[in-house]
Image (cartoon, rainbow, N blue to C red; front, side):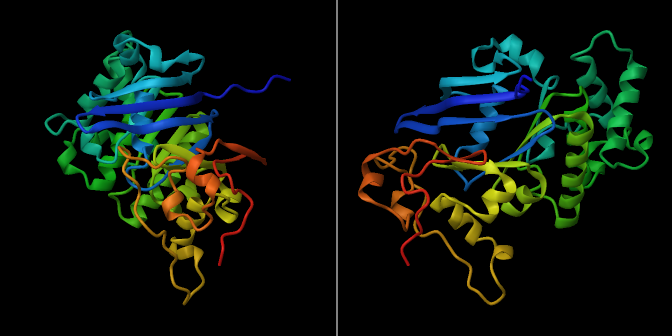
Length: 329
């Protein structure tokens, strides 16, 4: 029996920014894939390259940024090699994006109904306005908005922040995409609304078999929604694997530090761990491992070798030459 092909395969993706100060390697050799109906969490500190990875998949990297290497295979087609016209037909149709700020999706001077109907008709000119309107109404109901018929006639400013985010999720789902990229979609929401949005997204992925890339710095959120996790540091994925085993038994020193800094992972009364030092400048990365200046397990090999991904079994990959060793006490 043939293995099911992933919806998205990212292979050695490199997205660089060419600035006056030098070349910023925002994404440097990133590889992972996502299957139908699967939720993959992409986590890391600010500046790790996770959002640029999402923008690269959408073809939304503006100058001075440029995809300089690798492939982004979406259902057998290389997005990185597509023309602007091909990308335009793909975006909002087969691939959608949910932004951290829903007002990046919503036009403040148009009714929600107008925006949703236009989003449908932009990719399906044969559909009637009444059919498009019915699909928009159903999408709002699917994300838990009560009285969708009435709410469609409202303007974005008449919704709360949580409701606006639900509307943007509904718009992302309108054309039944095969892949959704969600860039920190719950960061600005309170905990209650955050939980509701996560529940709705999980349910939608199960029902529609939509693949979801969830980009966040919040480990608690990703633990609650993802099937697999990719941990990014300084433009590279340093560890990836199933969510349960990666969180309970992190192998990369950086992942261990992240897990140790989450309050729920510490016993009551035990001080929170922290990762010493700062993320290095992407303009001036050290030779060898980018995490060397903050790592408790650093060795001579780390100073000279850029670690390659090591397959440690159970669908887990780790970029560390000292994988399997315990940090010195």
